[in-house]
Image (cartoon, rainbow, N blue to C red; front, side, top):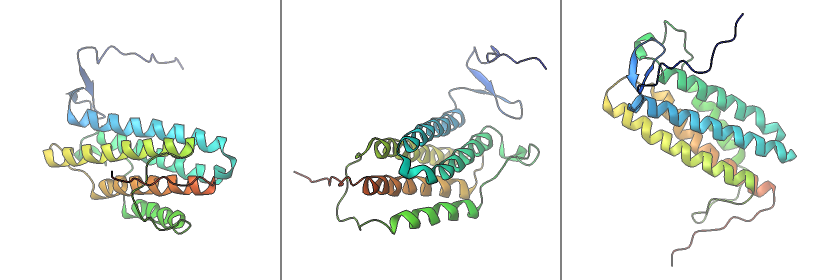
Length: 191
């Protein structure tokens, strides 16, 4: 088996191919959207590195890897027109995936004090990276809504719900990291 080259030169003129072979502009909303998915997935990878450095979170890493796999599924769904998803046997999003995130939110949130004010992002390095993941996730959500409203292609409601819950999960998990590390949250105060 020969190794394939990383570069194909097929995108040198600003076009790329979808899974179906359809050529589209690299400036399209669709491409920007799955670029955001890739960015979030890479940041989650950094989050995993931070959790590996803080040994008390090692048991949580598998769930973050599961999130990365679902983000890859999302990228492949976005890189293929909806009418071809079954043909290429792409993994979809279901209510089960949304519920799984909600269960994790409840698990960690039940260990936290109720919020009495807005909190500033930060704390430990892992929590800070988690907040960066969270804000990237919110950006992805906005792009999903923009794409949905453009009418270019259909999206699963469960995909949108998953991304919305994922940013909520990341927020709660960042608070959990700081609590486990004994780091007091800093509240936002208007002047």
